[in-house]
Image (cartoon, rainbow, N blue to C red; front, side):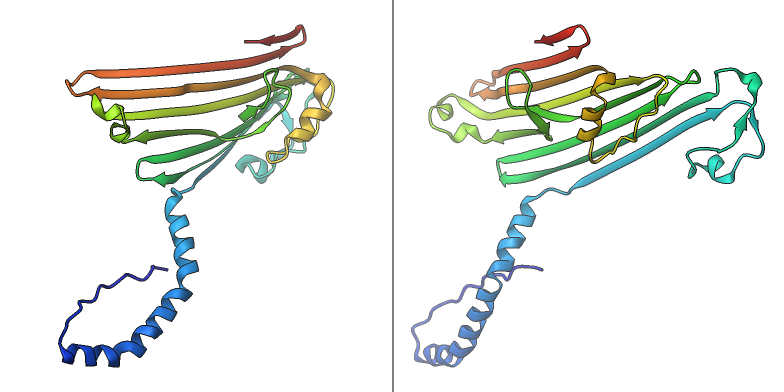
Length: 267
């Protein structure tokens, strides 16, 4: 869909032009009705133009090894679409049956053009990994973008990081007196990281899109957790003065929470 373009008409004072305008009046009224019908589509078109292209990425990696298998290895296991070989292993191998390493990485990024001088960018990423050693110890790790709402990090949700820059501040009052160019920056990125260790137990599968239930069910097996929030910068400003002197100001703020079996550490 492409919005209709506006056309300008020249006014004349001759009688001939007036008579021609009278004959074209019904056609003009018809075109006005048609343009009104497309106003809603034009509004939607304008909103879509403000959204930057959306980029979605998902990568899944599976590395595994099995020692001294008895029998023929299934073709599906060789090429990766079967997670287990389903065969017995020799008793002479001992406890080192093999290794398992499974990783899932996903991200989505986009942005919104608020105005010609300001664009807001968003980015959300999540990573889940599961590692199983030959001795039977399994370790799982999760990392995702996150934001907390209180100083003790007790309440929060998965949330994308953002950044934006406002240019053209040299046109603002006071600043225009001494600056040739000026811009303001702001950026936020927060991460939640948790890790678990399982011995002599088989945990359930980690759902890539519904992780909260896994964290609650296996809280007792959690080895460590960390939440950090970084405003880099919380407020930043760059200016070029009229005498070609560059001035940069950046105020950063970083906060973090580390949870270990020994206790909590807030920085």
